[in-house]
Image 1: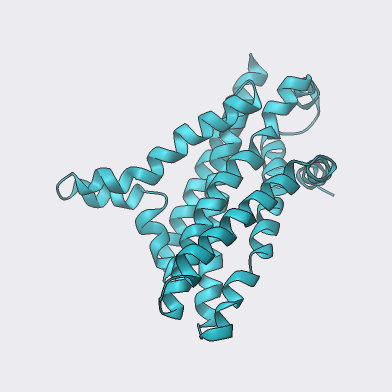
Image 2 (image 1 turned 135 degrees about the horizontal axis):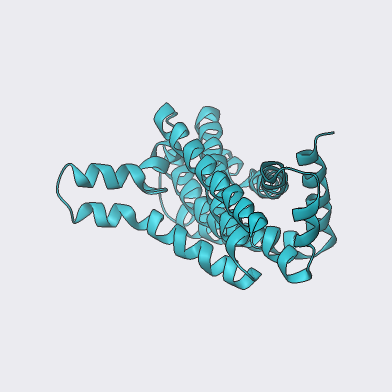
Length: 240
């Protein structure tokens, strides 16, 4: 088994030995359910619109959950003093980052899978395309991977888990709100800012059940960038 998978397994066990994963998943599903009932089921919307509202609300739960899931990945190692073991182990920094990312992504995927019953409730009184559901969940998964990589980078540079969450939010919120700045600017700058926004234009297509390759590539690039940044941060600390 590769070192990355060994680290992923170790971290996954750590998640479920503590109440963190259960609390984050339960809290996210509760928020998901409340929003879905309030915005989706209590209003007179078409079935496709209800599904769009579900994926919109789910994206918020995923983003917040990502920051809390990722906060412990490196910050906890630093707080408990076990970071030295990672720095001196014969493992490459990229393998450490990938292992920790995979474990957190597994927890986030579990959260996403447990929410599947909500869009299925639409079939009780309506009808939606299974393709729409599949594309929506693909978007939620890609969005979750991107926000998780931001949280992981924050944990890699922060000294504590609380600071990791705050730093992750400080980086994520401006990326989410770029579309508002885009509205106040003129072309071509507004198109550029819209293309950079991590949620608005890039996530909207998935909400509507439209699979667009450039949106998939965007989330892959964001995830890769922050994982690379976390790796470089670890390398810099190792040299110091």
